[in-house]
Amino acid sequence: MSQDIVIPPNLLPTDGRFGSGPSLIRTEQMDELRQCATTVLGTSHRQSGVRHVVGDIREGLRELFAVPDGYEVVLGNGGATAFWDIICCNLITRRAACGVYGSFSAGLADAIRHTPFLHEPIINQAPAGSYTLPQYHPDVDAYCWAHNETSTGVQAPVTRIPGSERQAALTIIDATSAAAALPVNLHEADVYYCSPQKALGSDGGLWLSILSPAAIERANAIAASTRLEGARRWIPGFLSLTDAIAQSRKDQTRNTPAIATLILLRSQLQWLNDHGGLTWAVSRCQRSADTLYQWAERSDYASPFVTDPHARSQAVVTIDLDERLSADTIVRIMQRHGIVDIAGYRKLGRNQLRIGVFPSVDPDNVRALTHCIDYVAERCLDNGNTASHA
Ligand SMILES: *Cc1c(COP(=O)(O)O)cnc(C)c1O
Image (cartoon, rainbow, N blue to C red; front, side):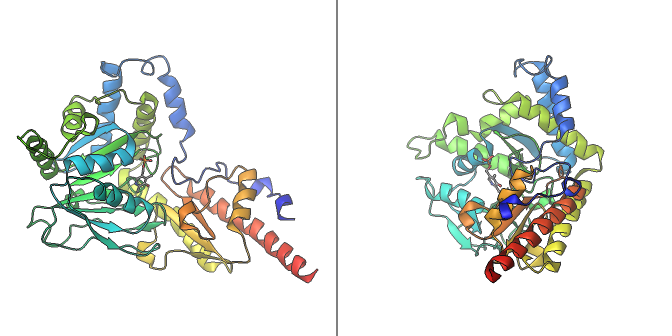
């Protein structure tokens, strides 16, 4: 029976965490956290110890992403989901256009739709497994899409929509599972935001955002407009981007951050920058992703879900299994062996594996994972054949 399958230990990866977020945190980061156990942890975020960590993070992000002059690194509490509401309150003047091609790109579009003082967003939608950028529209002041759609394993380019600059519209990119895994030229975006528990390999709870001068100016103008007599817009203090900008300039956050998350993030940024920065990180992810896509293409029971090779994510890899094999069974057997979080995205409802191949994941372990899946799949298929002959 398939539940009795035991994978030989020599096939197993040395680390079985392949989640798409929260993702693998390297043990060296935990060592660094331990070193801060009696110095930074448990101390005030208004004092130099923690502020130093925040300063290093802001500097580390500048280096990693070659942040253009005039752009600022801003952070706050609440993760990318909170940042969606921040976008609604602080960055869209009237109307946005959104590319929607999965749960996460839909998340911002939904938040915009529910914001009473904004117009109905213009949605350009593509089926799961593909993407579409929002299209130019004369009545739009912000174009929004996701660099990597985590739910489906689709990556989209970051490039300004033709005509958007002439209308002074902002380009707002959800980079939550892309930042540090996919290449980006920040001149092509005004807002590049993420949470640190995915490609950046830290823990959750924070949002990080790189803002262009135009985005900062937009936030200032919108904040000023809310102070006018009869203004319809309300910006809750917790969602104030101008406040977050002011706090970040002092290497602080409005309220107390998770200091452990900050320390883990600093450690990860140092690791990435010491090893060759974004170029190195991207090529490492690419190696892991190529291993999986090539394995699936050679396999007679697995295939890449995303058909367009350019849209296949190098950060989150989705692999369809044919109906002779149950992804649930494979996932369960893997879990028993310490290989975790490789199930497809629940709401997508496919017979699918989804594998996070962020920079912290060792490409050799991705190779090992394919061997483990082959080992299990071959035995499941044999069992199936035996059963049908019985
Ligand atoms: C995970 C994810 C989010 C939500 O991040 P939280 O930190 O849970 O708020 C948003 N966008 C994308 C693309 C994601 O992958």
